[in-house]
Image (cartoon, rainbow, N blue to C red; front, top):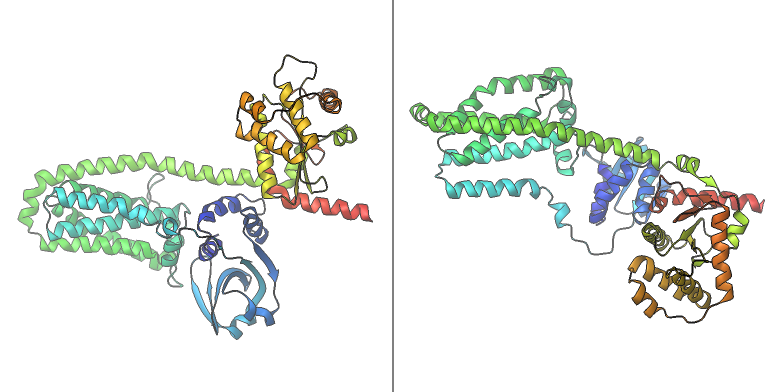
Length: 519
């Protein structure tokens, strides 16, 4: 996923990165090539997945996804060499001939975005971590007396706190391009392997990944309150932590045999903070204990209890997100959708009914809606269907019918249906506009009747209202909206908007039946 997200950013689709992540992770074919291309299609991003002859490699765009030694990589093509970036952010440079020997020839390329978008929020997303910390530091410097030592400890604690957040992101599988690149600078480096190792557990509720966040969090907030009086305590505790740092390095070297560069940065910061005690008189450390120690204990209780309360909530939320994506994959499975649909019994009579039409009935996705002007759910059903039609104008057909009792002359909204069908009989485009005004623009009864004033009554329209109502009664449909897709009752477990996930399936189903009829 990291590679596709980077390709989207490189192609200037800044606003679609998060949407792609949601669509891709919940795709029923995740994590296949089809899941990638189908998710891009749903975002209306022109793309192609194709096998290319090696002779045509030089004609390919400068950046695209491809398979190299059966592994997905992002390829940057230069004049004489290529740069391959794998999912972990590791980059490899190869000359053309060397690359072509093991190239699998399958590519996924997308059309660069021609629309102007502002990348600032995505490109500098890391500012969301840095700015709050920076503001707190400035506030402390302004409100308190500081020394070089106190400012050094405050700055390094802030950096350590940010790195600690990155470590937790790795633990919870929240990947970022910047951290992924840093964590895979060398072949022997792998933050993921170290952070998720069994060696990282202290107890069932506390792990080594929690310690940097709490340690630097406690230091940071203590220094914000009393920057000078807490110098000795923080430096002293950092010095006492050095044996644990040595143990951490030994585990990475001897046990896991992989290096966590984020962890090494944290160790380096703690080591430097410990050395700062050498520049602080012991007599001053003892003198400041009366102020520094209570402040440090207060910060300890605050950060420790706060993290212990917040951590299980985050873990449950992340786990819930994963479960939701699994359920979405199940829901987006076309076979599951088909199993929940029910056949329409009076299909021939249904297709004889004449309503307000959008598109051609020869399209692959036919949506028939029985609506009522007074039904709130009908507004949403029509809006979802119309949105789908606008998005797939060459694939979606809509026929809007009505389930309104023609005998009820007291119902003022029966007149709305009569007028809609009369307007549509004269001009289908005007009928569409009037329907949109009622269900989507919701301009109200008086304004609508004033705008769409049609006088008189038509026997054909009156008969059609009877036919549509009788069809519903014969099929025991005494509710609205009634949704029918490709001559099958639409399952209640889905919304019309969910049809976007099955457009390819409907197209394939349509082509199969068309070929079968042709034979």
